[in-house]
Amino acid sequence: MTGHEEDLLPENNSGYKLSQPKQSLAEYQKMDEDDPSLQRYKASLGLSGGNDLSDPNDPRVCIIKSLTMDSPGRPPVVIDLSAPGSVEALKKSPFKIKEGATFTMSAQFKVQHEILSGLHYVQVIKRKGIRIPGGKSDEMIGSYAPNTDKQPLYTKKFQEETAPSGMLVRGVYEVSSSFVDDDKKTHLQFDWAFEIAKDW
Image 1 (cartoon, helix red, strand yellow):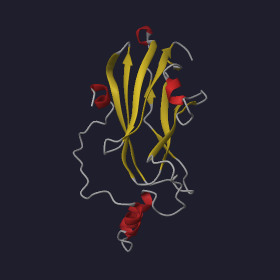
Image 2 (cartoon, one colour):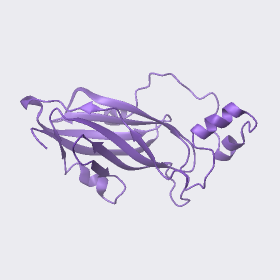
Image 3 (cartoon, one colour):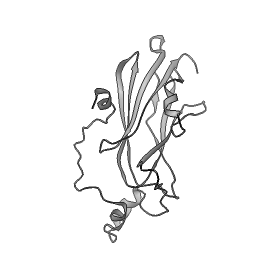
Image 4 (cartoon, rainbow, N blue to C red):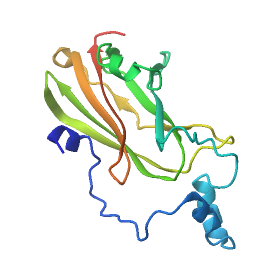
C-alpha cells in the first residue's frame, strides 16, 4: 500500500472490533425475532421490510451517486459520480467557492447485497502538490442496510464548513477523496479540484 493510499484510509483511533463475524441479511433478519430492543435496532439499520433493490448483475456493495455542495443563497453544486466518465472529468473542471462562504457537503449513495458497516468519507486537500495544514478530514457516514423501495437512496449531510478568506488562500486546490468502510474496503476513490476565489 502506497503512502497516498494510506492517506485515504480513515483514522483508526476507536479500537473497535466486531465481536462476531459479519452475517448474511437473512441471518440478521431472523436474529432474536422476539426481542423488541433488537427489532428497534434492526429497524434503525433499515431491516424492517420493503423490496430489496440490489442489482444481481452489479457486485458493488456501496454505489456513490453524487456529492453536493450547498451554500446559502446559491443553487446547489452537484458532482455526479454515477455518469460514465464523470470521475475522470472532475479534476479538469474545478468548481468555485467564494472566500469566506459557508457551505455544506452531502453524499447520496445506494447500498446493496449486505449491511455496509462504518462507511467513512476521507479527503486530503493539497495546494501545488503539498498537503495543507489540517488538510485531511475523515467524516463518519455510518452503517446501512441495503436500500429498498421504501428508501431507494441514502443521503448523508456533513458538517458545515467555512472557506478560508484572504488573498493568500485564493487559488486552485487538488482533493483526493475516498469512501471507505470499517473493513478498509474502498468503495470509490477519486481526485477533483476546487478554486477559492474572490467571488462566485
